[in-house]
Length: 151
Image: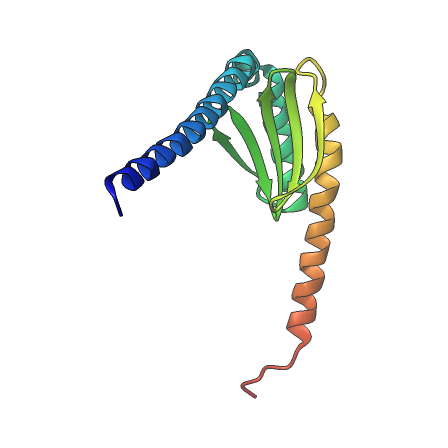
């Protein structure tokens, strides 16, 4: 390979990295803008009486279902987890989005009002947990009736 061929290949490689670097910079900048737009909502979510009431009502509902509901703060996101379901409160530039998930599959998304009643989002989420609990109990009962292979 001659010097000129090598130089041409090096220049082409540099051009390719410049475009990737610009795309990466644009992506990071848009992420920064989204984070800045969501910051006031994230602060409201953390300090709101709505959040405390949501945790209390979810704990009470979980106790009635005999299901432990875990609460986790992931940065600015509040996640409620139980069985295979999650309810995430995610600050966005438009407000707070309640995102209902089963595993990694998003089932539903809606904006919530922090001045409202947290029972509204729990009325959608708790029945999912009840159904999963019934399915788990039925599966456990079916497994208990299977004969042991050791016998």
